Every structure is written in C-alpha cells, then in structure tokens.
Length: 333
Image (cartoon, rainbow, N blue to C red; front, side):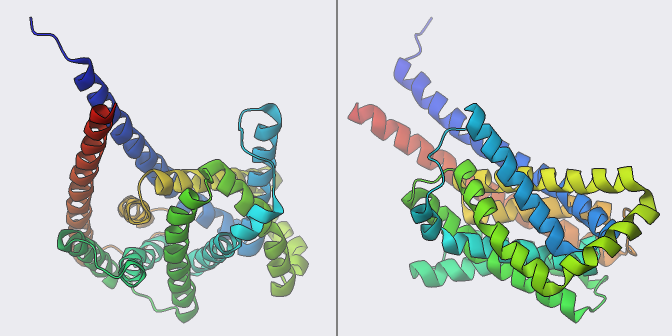
C-alpha cells in the first residue's frame, strides 16, 4: 500500500480547517441574522422605541463580554482609550448602521426591508473600486449584479412607498458598506479580534446612543411605551422579548465580525443577502405578512442564482489561495 506523505496531510489539513472555518462563520451569521430580523421586528411591534432597543443590545453585549473577561473565558487587553480613539470611526459607523436599520425595520415590512438592505453589496463594490483603484473580476461583478437585480425584482410587487423608511434603509446600507470595509482593513492593521472589536463597539457606542435616546424624545416616551407593551402581551412576555432581543443582538454582532474577519466584507454582505431569501419567504406569512405574487418568486429565483454563482467563485478562489499558501510554507520549511 502506498504511504501518504506527511506534507500532503498537512496541506489537506490547512485547506480543510480554513474552509470549514469560513463555512461555519457564514452559516452562523446567516442563521442568527434571519432569527434576529424577526426578533427585532416583534420587539419593535411591542416596544416601538428603536434607539432604546439598540442601547439595551449594546449594554447587554458590554456586560457579557466584561464578565467573560473577568472569568478568563476571553483574553484580550483591557480597555484602552488610545485604541478606542483609533477605532472611533468603526464605532460611529456601526452605531449609525444599527440605528438606521432598526428605524427602517420598524416602518417597513420584512420583505421590503430585506430588498433595500440588499443594495449594500453594490455599494461595497463601488467603494472598493474607488478605494483600490480597480474593479473586482468581471465574474464577481456580474454575480453581484444578478443577485441585486433579483432582489429588486423580488420586491417590485411589494413596493409600498414609505419615504422615511426608504431613506433610513439606504442610509443603513451606506453606513454598513463603509463599516464592513473598515473592519476588514483595521481589524488586521490594529490586530483587533472579533470579540475585542465588539467590546469596543458596545462600550464606546453607549454614550452616543444615550444621547440619541434623549434628543429623540424616546427617554420621555419610555414609560408610556412600556405600559402599552404590558397591555398588549403582559409583563413577562414583554420583558422576555426585550431581553432575548438584547442578548441575540450580541450573538449577531459577534457572528458578523467573525464572518467579516474570516472571509471578507463582500462575503459577509452576500451571506446577509442569502439569509434575506429565507427572511423574505418567512416574512410573507409571519408578523403581519405581505401579499405574495409571482414577480417575487422570479426575483427570488434570480437572486438565488446570483448567490450560488458568487459562492462558487469565492469558494474556488479561496481554496486556490489556501492551497498555494500551504505549498509555499511547506517548501519554505
């Protein structure tokens, strides 16, 4: 029987580990993101103060991470004002994206919300083209165009115009695109891991969010909204829903960071678009639902083709790079 060379086993192990980590981070972000859309929507139906909800999510994330640091479960340097200043733009963009996103979700139905959020990949492509001075390969560009075109068609039958909701959703897309690109670059330059970046975002965004809550009038509206929520579903259900929303927000943020740092900004956005397919299908029936028609089916099908095309391209490219790197290290060793 022929012996398997140790070098070949090491090479295969490197490829398998890298690909499995990429797949895991994409699946985690996608599944949590689908669930989070409905949790956020239901929470806002019961307690329609979006800025307060974001503040509670950040507070929960900060407390949990601080507890994990105290127990030794997480291990990264303690809070540094110098690093906080270095990551200030990340925090500002993150906070703006989250706030605009929840405001738009409160006014739009879930399918329309997902359709508008799917414009983010196009924004990332354009920003990268200006940033790096060149467009990505034509195959990637074409796959994203097909994907986004499918999104537009899927939502065409449900476009109930809401100017405020549309503006908030588009602003969220713009903030998210710039945010993803900065996380992709600064995460490496500053040697900041996903848990540490989430920690800084949570802690540093709280003062801004509290200011927004005060200026927007949500602080004074809090008692009334709380009592109205209790009248709708009762104290236990309301508090449980808000608590789940706050805790799930941390898991979503962590999975988003992990996917971005493990893969790329565009990959994370595409995963978000893919989960939107599931969210749209469920959104037709859950939490009020929307009217379904064949135009939506055609758009979703086109969107799926674009997603599968892009995934195939990225899979092949990543496997090739990982293999080349493993061979280079093996020869160098």
